[in-house]
Length: 268
Image 1 (cartoon, one colour):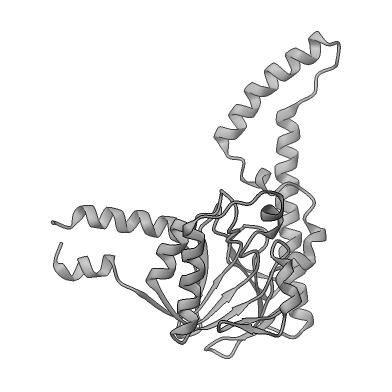
Image 2 (image 1 turned 90 degrees about the horizontal axis):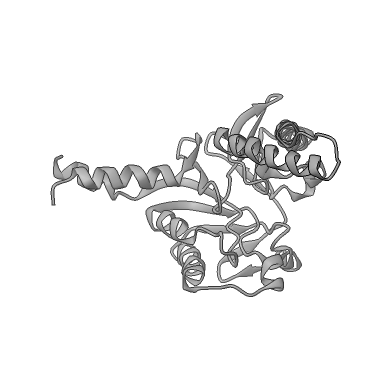
């Protein structure tokens, strides 16, 4: 592999706008390592923090904080210091910052929501999305049950019903219940997306950008472009706007794996 390709492995991504949400700093599940790698490799004119950046709910119950979380905060503040416009839209887990809406702290503007004007002139509503949480009625993780999890559920179902028989209870299908829950979880996500798209349409906008449900997505919903930037606990994803106004969802875990493979292919 020629030296030019080695530089491609480590290049900085230059985009117009970055949208990230649901970092949940303060929890053991927060992938601050992946996030730091992303922030070190991106340059943008504007950064939207679309809620649940710090998990105040968890921190109130049990304090958990380490140096990488501080490094994430410093990286964001460094972007603001070096000319990036940083807009922070608090979510439900960091709702304590909603008391500061309208203020600017260390170069970071706190807003309840925003209207983003893209490079191509299209306008987008930017909000965390918890305002529409009434449509989320089922456990989100059930939507991600795969074949392996379903096989495990079948095994558990056998032992579960063996115990029920011994206790004199009738058969009850755990696996069928899980399948129904998966179906309903998908419906709930679809209703959430529809509700956000309807709100953007009501305001006369071209699309909506949100977080909250940890489900990265970019699709048209009834003529409105719905975009969810995902999270940095499970998906490790970000939404970026390129300089021509085109949007792209980034799977940073996949990007890291690709860079690792390219490094292995480059002679030392």
